[in-house]
Structures are given as C-alpha cells and as structure tokens.
Image (cartoon, rainbow over all chains, first blue to last red):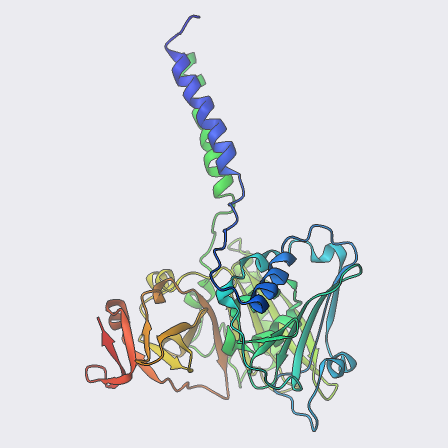
Length: 186
Length: 231
C-alpha cells in the first residue's frame, strides 16, 4: 500500500470528524443517582416523579391545574374537590401538548424530597394533576395556604423548589404567575 | 496549492461540526439586560412604576419597549392575560416574554400597576450576575429555620436567588456559603406596598467572598449584625 504524506493528515481529520459527530451532538449521559437513603416512601415517590420524564407516548395523557389565590380567605377550609369546583382560571393540556415538558422531572433527586410531618390538608390553594387514561393519576401536586408544606401524590413533603421548577414548563402564564406567589419557595 | 485549499476546506467543515453542535444558540443578550438597560430608577422599571403607572400607560410603555428592542433585533412580546379571583372578578396582568426572562406586571382593577415580577429563565450564577451587573451594596440573609435565603441588594433593587442554603449544623446554626456563588439568580420583584425587606443579617459582598461559614447564633462585631464569620 502506498502511504503518501497527506494520508496521515486525512486520517486524523476523518477520525476527528467522526469523534466530533459522536460526541459533539450526543445528548449528555443521564446522571446516575446514587441513593443511600432507603426510605421506601421517599424511594417510591422519587420513582414516580422520575418516571414522568420517561413518558414517550402522550396519547391519553393530560395535565390539569386548578387554583384559587394563595391570599384568599374562606370561611371553611378548601380541599381538592373545592378547588376543582371553583375552577377559576385553571387550564388543561392533552396529548402532544405535553411533549417535551416533563423532562425536568428526571432531575429530581432523593435530597429534594424531605418528608414532613402530617399537617393540615384542608387548606388547599393550588392543585396540579397529571393523569393517564390507562394508569390513572400519575402525579398530584397540592399547595396550601400559608406557605406550609406541599403534598406530592398524597405524601406531605417540605417545600421543594426543584419540583416547582419541574412543573413550570407545563404551566400557562396565569398558572405561572399564581405559582410565583409562592415565591418564598423559589 | 490545491492540496492546501482541500485541507483548509476539511478543517473548515470540521470546525463547523465542532462548534455547530455544542453552541448552536449563541447568547445575543445577557438575560439581565432589562435591568442594566433600565430607563428609570428602581422600583420604576422601563417607565412603569408600581403604585403610579396606570394600566393604559403601562401598555404604552410596553409597546414602546417592544419597538425599541425590535430595532436592535431583540424580540420582546407581551400579552394581556387574567386569572379569576375568588370573587369571580378578573385580575389582569401583562405577560412579557424577552430573551432569557419573563415578566409579570400585575394590575388590580382600574388601579395602577401594583407589582412587577421579572423572572430569569436562563438563570445566571450569582458570580456571573455580579461580574456583569455589578457588586451588590449588601447581601441580605433571611434565616427561616432550616434554610437561609440570600438576596443581592442594590439601590432600589433586590435580586432573589434560586436556592436556599441549608443549615448544615443545627447545634451551632452554621451555614456554608461556599456554594453561594454558584447559586443562580432567580427573580426581581417590585411592588408598592412592601418597599423594604427586613433581613436577619446583611453582609458586604467582600465578606461573603472571603468566608466559608456563618454562625447565625453569634454576633459579628465587624459587621454589627448577627452571624459570625468563620473563615
């Protein structure tokens, strides 16, 4: 085989080009989470949250949010059904409208979930639910009056900014503005 | 000569691949340009002052803002939206979208604008923000029990940071602030009813830059506030 002077240069260029194509455009590797916290409740909650980012089929998937102002006062405490009944300015997304908006759920880590003592679930102000026709409710976020703890899938946890950040892409401007009133947590 | 041109072409293509993929979207403007290019003194923002500017005046200002930046090739859009309050009335707000930030301008009935909320979407770190926008007069610290919130305080402006700093030692009430500089700036908030924020402690930027931990239980004679610095 004849080995001219330009061949090594060409070979290096081709290798460099291949390398840049493979690495330059590749998606970053997902962070492998090393969990030393083995609390089964937290682990299950984390799995539920992280798995939202893995959803590829958006058929039959929906996101709904309902709220009343965090500053509003009522004679009686409100629960989820009250919020849905009031339905003031809520929104609903379906199917491909959700595509590309669940990715931040993959970034939630065990440290972002701190279980809280059971408090008062009867002062609900902001409710967001992600549902699947096939599997039912996948994610339920409930926020309360008075910047208390938040509830995810029925588990009360200390306020987590990262979880609020994760839902942010799903929200309409009105829903974002209302969520921002919980700015003590951002 | 032909070989040289061939080589140059190959190198050019290679460079395109190398830089085209990783930096496909170049930053045209800094995400906080709407602060540094403010046309009036805070809490007035772009000629809109909470508690003074009416809704129609605010819309005029926004229209001008859109045109002014369009001439610079920067797209700013705004819409008027509403949420319905508990009494069934509509609370209107302007939603302004700019490169790197979104802004909520709250209205209440026919009253003047009552708040302006600038949220950084492409959040720079505290270090980047200070390097580009300027050193804050003070750093405000709010101690809320398990966490410490830090705000950058400028003249008429306080910049909220994204993450609270956890208290890592419950007994000594100490917080490590070495991650403070990697914290991201989150938002700026102007309203008319709460112009001042009472902080638990305030520190000079230089002090924050030199310190590793703060003991929230001890008084620091140098700064005349609680929170002894432990270098």
